[in-house]
Length: 300
Image (tube, rainbow, N blue to C red):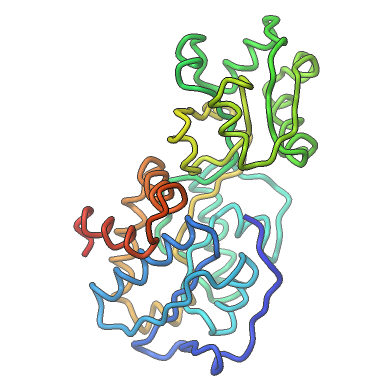
């Protein structure tokens, strides 16, 4: 979820609205989930409001979109609360695991610092997760990270877990998880193997490892019949997405709020995983998938 260096230029060249009433430039980051969120926004605003929508879906990374929003090259994009808190200035080192608290902190701070506000957040959380096979979890009676920690401490250390090298070393990754859940000593006996982030799902699904790191909304969780272990003691930060816009845009175009909040409230973890699967695994067009979802939910 890290952003790219801003490449923002002149808004007149890029066609930004600069807050002009009745015209809104909608941008997004460039990965699948963000493109879906962008097209959900574009299509809903076109169908439910009179505003002219300027499509900038796939603009770039977090910093690129945020700079564009500040500069008027974009008027709206979806940002994750955890990214807003830890990656966008002013950056914070404190980890907040409560969805409502981090949302309110970001909203208050960004309104005061930038005149930028958030609409309602979606309930789905694109955070780090530790994954295992559904069947194995049911057989072992393991549904949470506390359960897994207890299982490892009980002597089940002749097992393989997979993750990328960064997650294995970061304090907010594997070392932090094992310390937070009280099984760091026992975890040293596990066979930890490094694989690429996109391969962890397949390795666990093919029974080559008992546990792997991943992201909560990745559609490969569905593809390989995996389940995420509940972070029952609140270690990982929260990444709920919410539409982010300048307050002046919302003041000039109040009709955009209701349809965007409808989208946010409709997007459960299962829903976004399914949408991601249709695009990134089944190869369907992101805009078409977004349109069909809006119709199925009665939003358009």
